[in-house]
Length: 259
Image 1 (cartoon, rainbow, N blue to C red):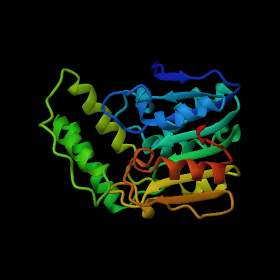
Image 2: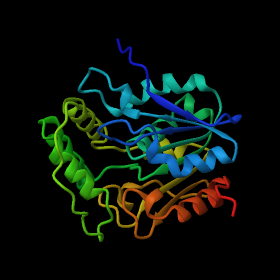
Image 3: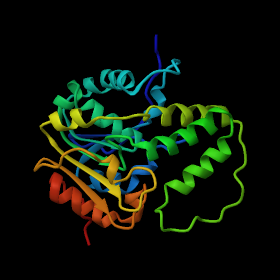
């Protein structure tokens, strides 16, 4: 029986709830990956809960995304109405799976950032390469690959000193290995198409991981995919203004900061 407690941080005390699910990362960053939008949402009066998606990994190394999603649904359903359900990368894939659960029924709007709806050969191969390295204990090399592939394709790699091992390498390796494998052969198109709420999926035009081929749901008046020019896997850092404009125009959430 899984007895893990999901790790999260809360920002703001507003009456409307935003729930955010994190991407795969070797160690929890306390929600910093979402910080640019968190600040704006809190300023607009929202309460923002950011969860470490991988804090709910089970002891079953063969657990698939469908079962992982059901366990997360049991955690999130008691929260009640969710004004915005957001996720990045793996967190966004989890959001799409949750749309077909009771959590989706109590969610008004969804925001996906660099989140695949369907895997293809390129994405499976690259995620698999990092998972294999991490699972074999070569966390440093897995992280170097991750650092290379989250950048826009046309941006030269940043020269950094060699990554040094740490006492937490075993846990980091487990998180990377299991997290990336959860996305293997992903296909969530039916869950997205059946969901009646407003959904916005943002991805980098120059992403080396989640690309246009992976954001594959049919666009409708309710469901929109936006390619962010020049961005890689981190559109919040690469073009925050375009992200905020898209959130405002499609989701009706004004994140503009006062002058």
